[in-house]
Image 1 (cartoon, rainbow, N blue to C red):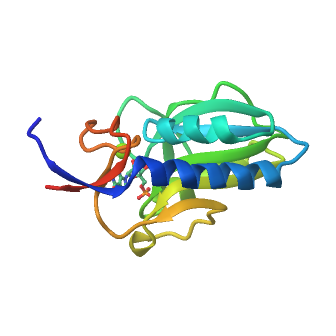
Image 2 (image 1 turned 90 degrees about the vertical axis):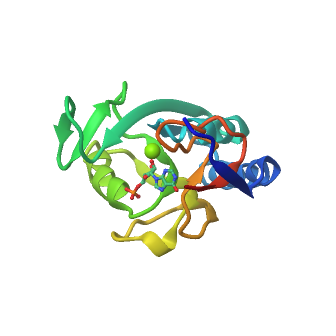
Image 3 (image 1 turned 90 degrees about the horizontal axis):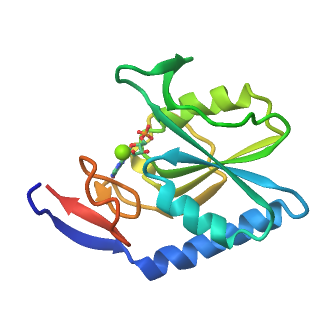
Length: 174
Ligand code: IMP
Ligand code: MG
C-alpha cells in the first residue's frame, strides 16, 4: 500500500500513562472481585493487553468480533457476530473494551446483546472517543481520550488493515 503521512496525536508514553490510570480506576471499582475483559477484535487487542497487565484484581479475558454488515456471519439481533465469545457472561463483572467510539452504532447494538446474557455488571471502556461524531447515545464508563473528528490509526486502529502495529495513535492524511 502507498505510504501515507501519519502525524503523532497521542504518543506511546501518553497512552501508557493514561492506560495505567484507567487500570487503576477499574481495579478500585472492582476491589475484591474478578473482572472479565471482552476484547472487541481486532482493534482493541493492543489496548486490552496493556490494560489487563495493569489491572490488579483478578482478570479473565474473552474475545469477540462483530460487524454491522458483511456476509457469512451469524446474526444476533441487529449485529453480526463474526467471532463469538468462548464462555458465558452470567453473574460476571464484564468490561467491554473498545478501541474507539465513533457514531456509537456498534456499541449501541452490542450492549443489549451482552446484557441479555445476564452479567452481574456491564461496563464500557474505550481508549478513544470522538464525541463530535456521535449518532447514538452510548454510556461510557472509562474513556482514555476524547479526540477530534480525524481519522486515526495505530495502537490497534487500522486503515484498510494497515498500521495497527504503530506504537502510537496518529492522524492519517489521505
Ligand atoms: P462506531 O460504530 O461508528 O462507533 O464505530 C466504531 C468502529 O469504527 C471502531 O471500532 C473502529 O473499527 C472504526 N473506526 C471509527 N473511527 C475510526 C478511526 O478514526 N480510525 C480507525 N477506525 C475507526
Ligand atoms: Mg476497524
